[in-house]
Image 1 (cartoon, rainbow, N blue to C red):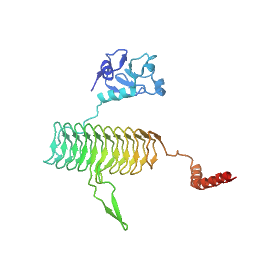
Image 2: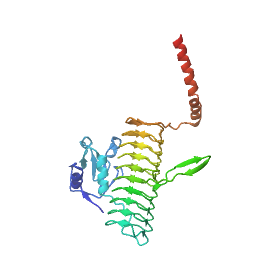
Image 3: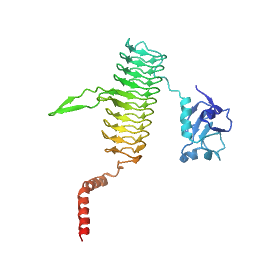
Image 4: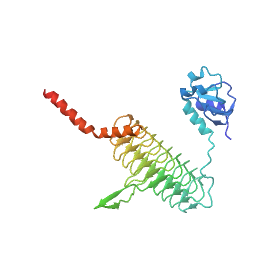
Length: 340
């Protein structure tokens, strides 16, 4: 079990400990659920009522919130970021694999760095490069000529196709597919002619990809996921899309082909971004939004309608269909007024 003194916590976070810094914590928890030996945090004022009842050994909080607190506080500017960093230090998640399992299939031409772990029934194809400290989970397949960077973890049953490059310190969760064919076809008099997808996928450093997410390979050039991107579960990234650094994409979102998402964007869950468009840096797209045209300016964009009672929704749908006719009538009235 990992343990830290509060003094060590304060030093790691460059924070001030208000109280006994010799106390020890071994895990983190919410204010409501915390017990002795656990560290909690107050980042949202709506949970302040739980502060006086918490059993946490110490609480991460801002200087303002610590003024009237009688318990042990660790004071810093951003308690939630502090919580994340301590949670990483105390993380007890097991390794994706330990050692090289005898049932793993490893091609003789594959290159394995130091301290590589490969789980049961994993397949490492020809000319693959696994860098130092890479972990390959049970049942995972790494296709021909793919490269996995240092300290990257692929959990169980991930499929990495050929010619995929994944950078350092990445995490790919179970059942994700990296490098499958993009949806490329030509139509010849009603018959679909498949276009071979000969590009690859290039994933930068410090990227996390959620479970059951698919990232298609490029048709000719590569699909690109840049450094620091975080992608939730069940996301589709189509061929030749480019996702800029430190962008976050929530679950069930679809990014269509040849679309370029800027840096530091946040895309809410169940959104859809049309193909062959660009989204500027720093854009925040609300959940359920359909993006169908270029976004050139930083800001918050939304398009979803809220759930409403069915009868009202049906009436409003009819009225929506009448908008064009209503616009034409208003335009006629305006023109008539101008003539008068």
